Length: 91
Image (cartoon, rainbow, N blue to C red; front, side):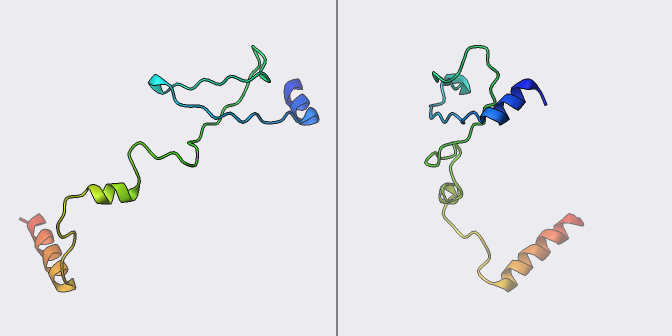
């Protein structure tokens, strides 16, 4: 264990919680008076709870699909379509 690690455990430095925005180029900037120039820090980034994935959620994807049937109307029709597909592999 390094001296710095021992010091962190012994003194129990508090975590610094910072909320910021992503800058152009996917960069983030953290400004905190508790941080001293030259100190090593560990940074974990997670989207805030209200943030949405840039690609959207599952419902956004489903709603983006064109209208129309997404499956066979009956089990028999589905099995027939699957059989036709499998049979086409053998040709």
